[in-house]
Image (cartoon, rainbow over all chains, first blue to last red; front, side):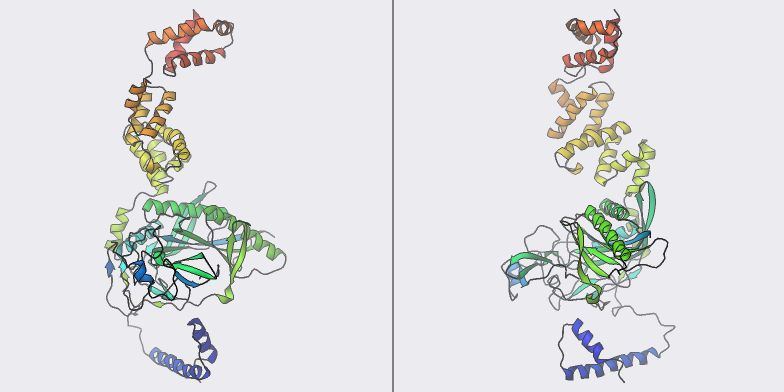
Length: 100
Length: 476
């Protein structure tokens, strides 16, 4: 029995704005379940004396100084946009109040 | 039943670095749309954000001023959601290890100090700005704001009234401006406040269902929105209903809050550590360097003004309202003006001139030392207080030194007794009826006669001398 239900897959897919057909859902129930089962296996290890790893990078404190550098031109910025008006990227009307 | 409100605030402030949080684009506010953009802040795939060191410095300074602990080790995280103001479909923010945490801010309401817990202050990037004026069922997106550094400051649910929430915002803004970490300009959106509001029967310990109020354009708007929301929730409960957990927007025109989004459709952000940015380690030495550079904060400065300059609590509060004003006042005093007189001039006539001209103290053409010189001229009797006002107005207009104005306009006070005696004699002979009344015991006429002498001297006669000489003359 998978640790993941079809409902879970549909929920995650909706968050990612993905439309999945029945076969894909079935496959993902299986695959995501296997991933979680693997995590359970890792949880069997005794990690009492292991520093928790919070980040994949061992390096810390990489910064840039607060200096303004030239940006790309607006023309360049807009050139790949499906729709623009020379000033703005144009998108379907955003409903007020829907902002996260 | 008696109810009590429970309020927590979330405030986003734009940190005033010159460049954005993860790229070198300018943070300038009024640039034409999409001119301060690059592949990083446009959210192109494969680009590499790099954290602005100054953002960390300023955020730690803000955290320390809010009595927060600073994380020795923190990291950036991805907050995932879809919205047209965010091209890469995640916002880089901080989740479980914010840079600053567990602080507090003391606010003063009706003469009492209340301590408000600060849960956390974390760094994140601002999103693009949408414009709905395009028409035709379309919106425009301007990425100039995308990647402007934000500090999100979250309080504990410690506020109990709209008035306290207002005081919190005013105090917070004042501190951030003292630190020079943000302009805190609500109109330009560099400070945005959201309130989480619930009510519960007075004395209860459990929280009621809360609503979140957004889209408020001013501090007084926040206060009104909270007042409205508290009353609305109490009414819902009194009528036997249930308060729905939801996001509500403030409609300033109608003076009400309206439902924007029910909790059911709220997002699940699936935070995870941002793999493109390395962890941030602020060691003790770094924290101390920032702490050592913190300016004196408003409350401490107010207290010192009362002790050092003998000012009333009210005067000290007004003069420390902003750092430039407090600096101006102190420069004036250290240039030799008597502290209480300097306070009166700065808060009175100078402030009136600034208000009339819709100007800030930073735009004032009168150097603090010049104001001090003018105040000293009054004390030394070189000009009268009344002439001082005239000189101040000229200084304000022209930026000239008071001595030059007094000389050029011939405003020097007349302290020459013989000259005043001559004017007094003239006034006495010109006003025989009033002199008669005075001699008959009508003391009040004295004021009229002094006024006549001052008028004849065009305000320049030394008022003390005028009083004495006039009295002596009338005795004869």
